[in-house]
Image (cartoon, rainbow, N blue to C red; front, side, top):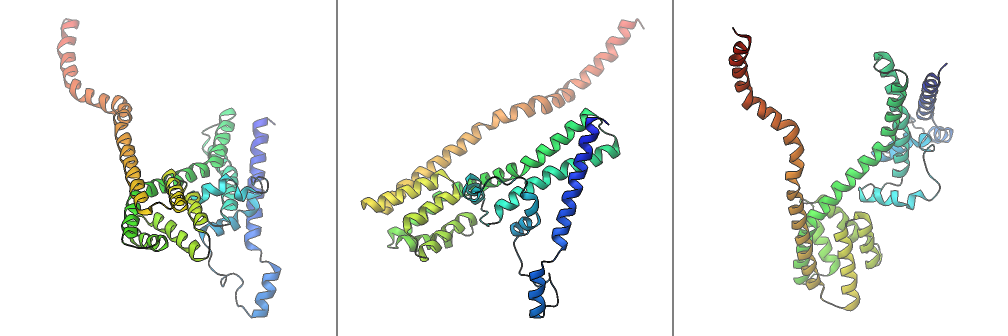
Amino acid sequence: MSSVQIAMLVLVFVGTFAGALWLISRLSVDNAQRRVQQVLGASSALDERPRENLVDRVAQATERMAKLSVPEEGFENSALRRRLMNAGIRSSSAPIAYFGTKTVLALSLPVGGFLLLTVTSAAQGSALLFALLLLATLGYYLPNMLLSQAIARRQREIFESFPDALDLMTVCMEAGLGTEAALTRVAEDMVHKSPVLSEELRLVNLELRAGAPRDRALRNLALRTGVEEVEEFVSMMLQAERFGTSLAQSLRVSSETVRTRRRQKAEETASKIPLKLLFPLIFFIFPSLMLVIMGPAVIQMIRVVMPAMTGS
């Protein structure tokens, strides 16, 4: 038996074993839960549980599989936890769901690819082994790419809407409102333009109402968003409060700076468009254009030149 066949058998065994464990964990009912429901007279063991969000359900479904890829203790407070918060995922079960998804994809994609390739006979030998390794790598790193895209999309929305929020906050503070009242009003007004930024400002207000210090609530805002402009805003607010300078004037200067940076970033993106269009023009548009323009002329030349060359 060759090494490729042994590897395929190992993958099939691991996939079947993991699927069996998952089915057993989902179908089995905890004894303590069954006893409690019997005492309470519940008619169903599963239908009356409170509804959970998607992240918690994924975490529960993949908790056993996640143990294969979960790092050492303390990963909840690591850079991964901050990345999940930057993506807007604040559930405590998010890291377990993240690692469980990586493990499930890294095992299920090679098994599915093996079954598909063996049935269709599309690849054999070393090509089949390379395809399975490629699928396993893709399944393991696919959650990383999706998380990075979610972070970039969320941070871009915050960055584009943040100057408008600063303008609203400046107007509110110049009208005589305090910092907490201004943040509350800005969060209410920005809910239609940028729900993400409105939610972050609302969380700051909730932390302040709960008794958290203002500097801690603002630093948590910068930590949750991960946007450089928000971090500069937090530093400006803390310095203005510490040295007793005008918050309204500082907010006006910060708003102009962020707006200028947003315009410069838009100009930079626009300046990259010709370079990005170069390769599609060369490889897709120019050949079609040359075929349409030169095609009739080439056909006419062939009709005229070929009889003269053959002497007919």
